[in-house]
Every structure is written in C-alpha cells, then in structure tokens.
Length: 81
Image 1 (tube, rainbow, N blue to C red):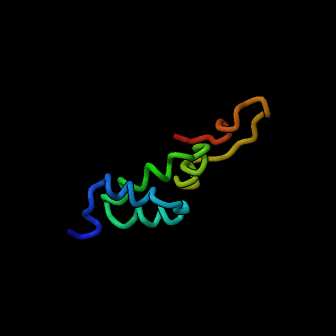
Image 2 (cartoon, rainbow, N blue to C red):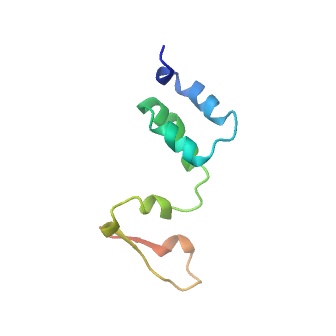
C-alpha cells in the first residue's frame, strides 16, 4: 500500500498527532485526492472569517468595501456575481 492510499481516518490521526502549521497542512492537501480530503477540514476548522476564501477568487470577482463600524466585519467582503 502506498502512503497516498492510507484510509482517511489514519491520515486524519497523523495530521492531528502534532501541531502542523497551516502551510504544511496546505502542502499535505496537495499530495493526492485522499490527502486533500483528510487535510482540508483541518485547514478550515478554525478559520475566523470567510475573507481569505473569497480572496482566492479572481480579483475582478470581489472587492472590499468600507462599512460603518456597527456592521459586522464579516460583511465587509462583497462578491460580485
């Protein structure tokens, strides 16, 4: 069995056994499809806001606008459709 063919449960246990920085988890997620399925939830589990995900889209698909301070910060990112 190749290391990329390990069951998802074992990969999850390996990825969570010690502290891995986000950039390492991102690298692991690009190894294979099965590693992607095991690492991606760990990358997203403590994401505080959606802005980093929106910024992955093409630059012409989103913009950041200034809003009054009484509006929640998560609404500052506007996606164009």
